[in-house]
Image (cartoon, rainbow, N blue to C red; front, side):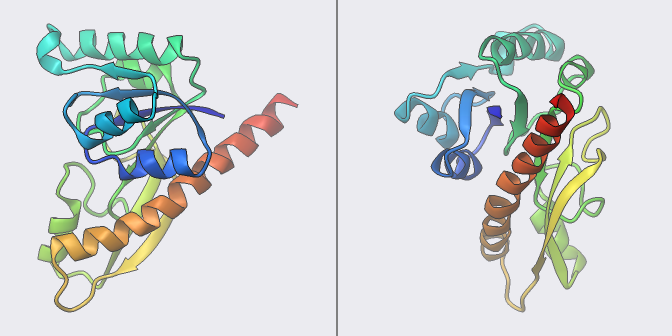
Length: 188
């Protein structure tokens, strides 16, 4: 299954997918200076830069990003640390073929980029990560896989985030494999 990966951050999930041999045919970012964009450039991955300031509206940005992803032939779009809400036109263009990795056990601590901090502030004993299908409602699409991570005494956002990312790196490729198997069986 060919992948387009949407990124805004350091790029650990993008790197993990590439290192595991998944076929990344496009990387799209809203932050051209982020670590994930640098990784894509260094590894010759087709990179589309979609900084909001280059576009008149969210819809214009997402239309351009949609065209880029389609032009590269991506079968699945993976939101791996992309920090913007996608427009309904984008989510409907890839309905059932757009997934997100979120650093919490959804529905807990959905929305926003501060799920780890909110879990610590809430004093929960466990948190984790979730791979889900993306819909128009933020972090509310059908859940594909989750992994539980214990919150340890003395955890900081950084220590907890590191353990959560370890699980993200495990379950994101598993979810992609599940979708690839489902797609293959549907086409037979």
